[in-house]
Length: 487
Image: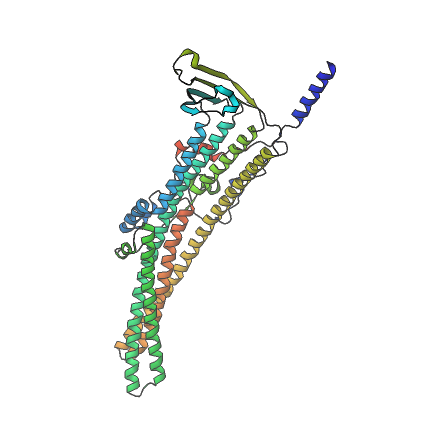
């Protein structure tokens, strides 16, 4: 007897020692602390304001009702948004499936089957018979360790991340429409300047031809005039192509055919948004950028995935029950003797699985580390994007001020050249040469103005594009993701 007990105890010890274990597996990712990211010197000259975050309808501040209507049209009809919404619904459905797995399952079934066994198997009694049965089944996993709940919370986190990403797609789309619209306005301005240069070059070439005919200039000056006219025609064609390209880009963003872009009128001059830098930017940026909120939800979901994977190493208990009726041959199904039933719990414990559970947990740890790394990368990129866009805006302000002085000087020179011509002191050809410098100055100013509008839109997007988290979606959880404990 003692030998039997000793053998049983030894066997139980070996079995338990051989059970699958999660020992030594843990994630390594660490979330960056936003307050530790230094930006004070980069934003040292910035104007700080607690109310500097963009409004949700920020584009209305650019001052063109047609742009407001185009953004509304794009938000209603862009196919990319439909795809983002479909992904969000698919993620919500996956969360629903994970939630359903936690709940009791009740099933009903029935069947009729006929068979005739081989005569050699049952002898002379072998004959065709019919089996009829119906049953009602019940199954419920008790989820003693919370694994199913963790799996549901992971799927729910992924669904919330996908919902936020759908909102991020809308923010990105509105910014792209505004930038394409500003580019269309710049293309029109370039076309005007190219047309003015063509008229100037043509007039200068005409005057040069007259001077050549009078013997005052040579064919060299005339050929130079021909080159200027051809160059101006080429620049006008480039500007027209830019108009067509901007309209085509807007058609794509609106989710319409190319003819839709032809109906877009020339934009009004847009007013660049003057934005200050929000107070406590690194910390507050987390809640005002949809991509950061989505990244935090990914981290949260990955943490729950780890928790669910760890429960796979523990015993699992299920409750099951079945009741039904079974009748053979011509016997009636609905009678007391046809009744059968079974009920009882079941216990399972992984012992030897070839390393499957450890590999699964190691994969979940890696997914958590990946989610953390992506969040950290997004946070660092977002903060640097704000600082770089703000610095670029400040630089452009200085450039515009300098170019305005150059433009004023070119205007003065053109006015003086006209006065000299009218006074008979200088030739009109000399005045047209001065006019060329004025047009070049106007081209540079138009480019800087367009860059200002474009950069203001980029800064608005860098500051979240008016994103406001929905408290009902669990933003508190998203902003403080759980970190799985190391084993």
